[in-house]
Image: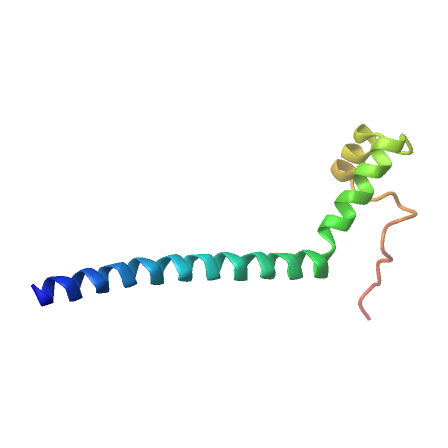
Length: 83
């Protein structure tokens, strides 16, 4: 009888440990995602792009065309010949 009680307690503790571990991992993953997104600036770029499209200063078709054809020659990085 006592062994059954101890086993039941251990099983409950195991479930609780798994829940705590899962929640901790989720919080850690969200923190890493936040730091990486701030470091890379993808969300800022996405926000600026969405604002530009909404304001009408640039159209979605222009953006798609630039992505498909690459940067214009004026905006292209300089090409250095090897010495």
